[in-house]
Length: 258
Image (cartoon, rainbow, N blue to C red; front, side, top):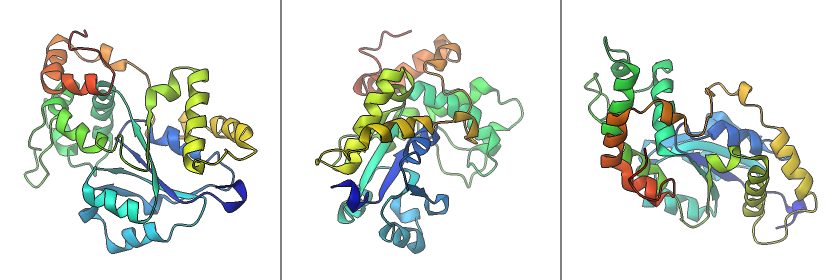
């Protein structure tokens, strides 16, 4: 694909609290790129309205939508039929859980809002609940999967056709690493043909478009913040439930981390 042909529409998918707005700002640094938040989609394909699904089929060039979409064969088939690429963003599950525990109490529409605001329910209790899973206070709320099952419902996108996976840490650990990862994103979006002649400048524009303070959900975006939040009991619990997940994602080599 050449630059003059225009960039085909695509989707930005992410695990909650994994750098969605960081990637969105990067992508909006691409000249002429468009994003419409009202076209976003979340959860399973059967939760979407016919209008939402039809909008996906009518996206224009240089346009993307974002969402937190669970992996399913139905979703994969849907995107493959549209020949639509996906950028999938993920992050250390421990940092995700900690960040989510801070975020949920600020969002009244979240199914766990009442659970997290019940009397005597501490920040530590919120973290433990997200690790173990459980039934929300409101019996109408959906059962919360444990961290392994919940995270895997998203991360099974990794390695699928037309999906480019990006680690949050690779975009925030160093300037050199960030530039390398943004180059990979550009190459992925434009396909196997040479990157547009302005590719180098484009990477610079994308990176310069980052401004975390303008994100409504940004808190710290810190790598390894879980070390200050998980006590020994919570770390043991996490290992028991999702220790293998950390190994599979190459965040740890074994279950001996502390």
